Amino acid sequence: MSADILALTTTLKMAFISTIILLCIGIPLAWWLANLKHKSKVVLEAFIALPLVLPPTVLGFYLLVAFAPDKLPGQLWQQATGQQLAFSFSAIVIGSIFYSLPFMVQPIQRAFEQLGDEYTQTAASLGAGPFKRFYSIVLPLTKHSIVSAACLAFAHTLGEFGVVLMIGGNIPGETRVLSIALFDHVEAFDYQQAHYLAGALIVGSVLFLSLIYWLSRKQSSLLPETRDA
Image 1 (cartoon, rainbow, N blue to C red):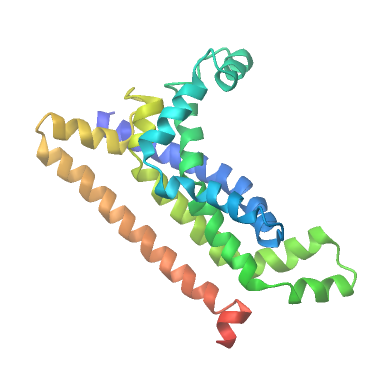
Image 2 (image 1 turned 90 degrees about the vertical axis):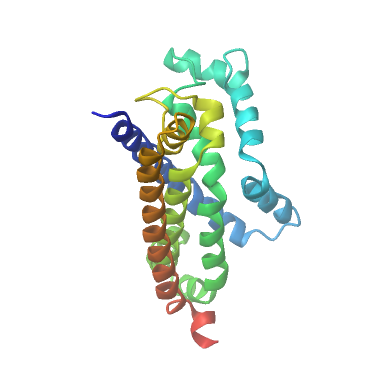
């Protein structure tokens, strides 16, 4: 298997696992934020949105410090798995979860807020419990936003460079992803191969964004406020 195909495999594997974990974290977190009335909500939203404005190297640096064997997170990981966390595939998955979190949470939170509580209150008056209301009403009505958020988080994870390089290094078959492979080709003046990788990332991004915009339009036709506007 060529080095670039290996990098592509590592990238897709990292993005897929990160997106699945982000879905498990992002949906309940977005629901909690959408229904939170406390004044601390703006601070929590700011922390979640922080990767949007923070230089990736800053986030990568603090994660690298936390993943060190003499720090508590890295120490606990090493005791549980017997392996060092920094410069491993698990490290770049954890890092990608942090820097793609706003791309998963924000679209879903907006969809939950836009949905309002009219349907859930009606269902509650008919005897439906909280879980049934969420599973049978909220999720079906916001499914396009959830899929759109998952596509956005997946696409963002595919192209990340700074955080992955900082906490994962450049280990072929382990932490070397497409963006790092592209950087290596540019450093080696292999512009033809760099063009191939950059072009593949552009085409993939356009396809994902087209899907996201299509899903957003589908979601707009479902949500009550947008439909009535």
